[in-house]
Image (cartoon, rainbow, N blue to C red; front, side, top):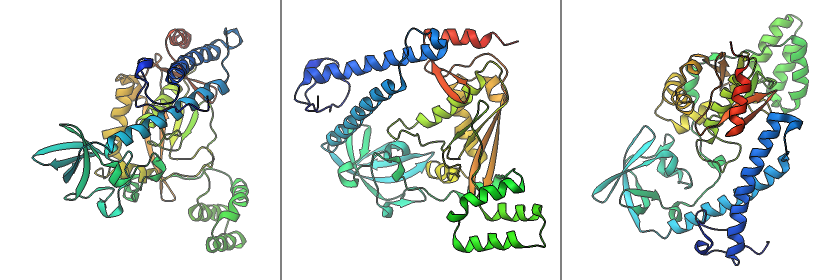
Length: 399
């Protein structure tokens, strides 16, 4: 198998369409076998999670991960091929005439075309001279390739390509903090000293001296020392994940950078729904903007400002993007929407969103026929026959 070149522009419909690689028959069979295996393992592992040891078969997480790695590699190859083909399209120079609601309007010859921000910036690496306030400058020229009469893309031969979302140039979103409430660290003075001992080596020397001066000051009570230390040092926010609390680092950037651009927003909604789909339906919290490994903040305000530069407040972002996305992905469930409370906080110059969830009602299904549910501190998703069984199980305790 090591001699096979796994590259194609899309999933082949039949083996005669596969024109890449030394052994097209084997490539064709491999691709579709992986798809079948992925579906099989997903179904059997979900059945096991649902029925425990009573399940007929348990697919290990290793088996699922191996298949996902193979499929991800194939998708990367697919992206590369599409980009190479695109570079051979007919090229044009357009003028950027407007940028509104995250959509560019560009004049190309005698016609006007639109390109969404997400499409424009998905692969190209534009020089900083072309950028202004997080988007391409109005009035500037851009090299495009033509797919059809109304579909144009930025020319990847001119601007290069990048598959990594980590290379996004984030803009300063500190202006969004003006409406956020300060987030206070809730712990005892002794607990604070314990945290301080762990992070002391990472504190800059100048600030470290200030910390020591506060600690040795005999005129300050413990409460005063704690207040000054928490305002001076960004202590990690040690929220512990449980069946009623989950942390997400980002609203937009998925852990797997090759997923589609809505993967992370969908993940967030599924986490909210999973907390609703429990037998006891306890009050829960979803915390966004904190790394679940380091417990440090993640500059959520810069993410929002980069993707939605025209939004001036967090309320505008919440009401224009966040709530409509939740509404759409859950089939406009009014009881769910009324059960969510959005709390925006500022912690040492970074934005943190805490969503309080207090839902009492029937099981919720997401778009695509997916039913997320929570088991302990982990989230699972079921579909098909497994989903029907889980809905029955969750409905048993509803009044």
